[in-house]
Image (tube, rainbow, N blue to C red; front, side, top):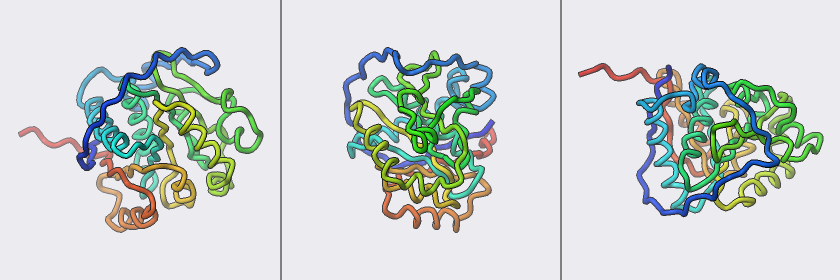
Length: 250
C-alpha cells in the first residue's frame, strides 16, 4: 500500500457553517463495491487508521489555505508520470467530503488518459469529453457513489488526442467558472495530467491553486524545479510525498 505524507505550510483556519444536507435528484447514483475502493487504495474502502489519517491531515491543511484565500478550485498534478496523482486527487477529494462544511466535485480533467472512473469500478456513458465535443449537458455526466455523501464525480469518459487545446478552450473556461460559482459551499478538485505534457499548463489559469504529487525515490530535483517554473503563475499549496516507505519502528 502506498504511503502518503503531506507537506504543506501552516495557515490560519476560518470557520464555516455546515453545508446543507444534499439530496441527489438529477445526479445519478451508483453502487460502488467497498472491495473495489480498497483495491484501488481509496480511503472510502478503509477503516480508520494511518492511511486515512494521513489524508485527513492533508485535508485540514488544504482547507486552511483555501479558506484563508477564499479559493475553491484546486488542481492536482505531478512533475512526472506514474507518481500516483490520480489516487491522491481522489483521496483528497474524498477526505474533503468528510468535512461537513462543504460539498466536493471531483473532475477528471485528464482528457488524454481519464482514470478516475476506473478507480471507482464503473464505466461512464458520458463524461467531460462528451460535454466539450458533443454538448452533452453537465447534469447527464455527474455521478454520486452511493454511501459517500457530499461527493460527486464528473468523469472523463473517452481519451482525446487534442486534450491540451480542449483544456485551454473558452468552453472549458466557462465550465470551470460555472462549477466554481454554482454552489458557494462547493470545492472543485481537478485531476490533471502530469507536467511532462502541455495539458496541465494549459489548464492551470482556470484554477485557484495547485497541489504537486511527488513520487518518493523517482521524482528528481530537476523535475520538481521545472514543475514549479511551469506553474510559476499558479499558487502552489504544497507538495504531497507519495509511495514513501514507512519509517522503521524505533
